[in-house]
Image 1: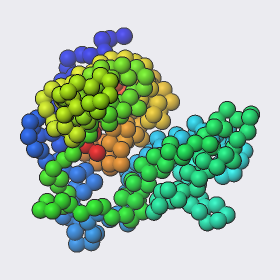
Image 2: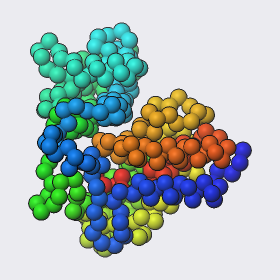
Image 3: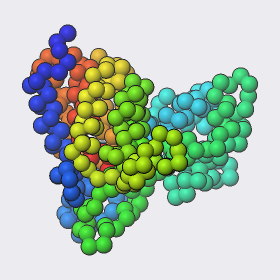
Length: 345
């Protein structure tokens, strides 16, 4: 096998990364970013009110199903498939994501309560079922899920509902900030150390945790999220740290470096690859896999045609260099991880 990191390939990846950098236009001060879901608003102004989407595109529907797959469907497969995967109606926990999506989105119980209520997430029947002990049977290894406080299913449905309401079901986006221009955020909020570390851990799995703990999760000064001065291991300067951090050169460099370290491990690449729905890292990422990869970092955002093409070119470059398929996956994840505006919620 050839070396994993050829200089020519890395240069290509870095160039591709800058194509995806919507937001970070300088490291020290304020910066502006286009909202990828509100591009070309001016061309739609005569026919479509800003923030509505009564006719979702094929890409938006595809992304909606992918968000469902990584949220509600993932929770259902883990906790409910013992019954609702094959034997017990409704079959919302079956392996077929398309069928599960349709059932979960359209389903109602005998009391006309929606399985997933996008208008009132807390009223969702799935949440109620995760708390009412209905599957408390000794022979079910996952029976404890039905005795939870509903938080796991709530979080999953909320993420899915947020996207559906905004892009699929005709929901309305919030208006731009006072004095702002539709489609442009004048002030962008960066997430704190907890969000950045947790996101990387969720995408890349256990091998990422030691790295993110040491360089991100415990770095109040660079990543914000002040700690409690009365708790252990909280220094006085950290208790005064910013709750909402700003983009600095050290912060950007740390994330960039951690991405490199995490993705030097094949286990991390394989863990993330599995989340996209691909069966093996011995085959190249498909267009659907690329969309899924983007969705891991940019939850709820629409993958534009231009960005999809840029990511595909990264995959194509590894092919032209005759690298194994896993290097295409590594390059894809590196490009997105390096494009740090995924830290903007």
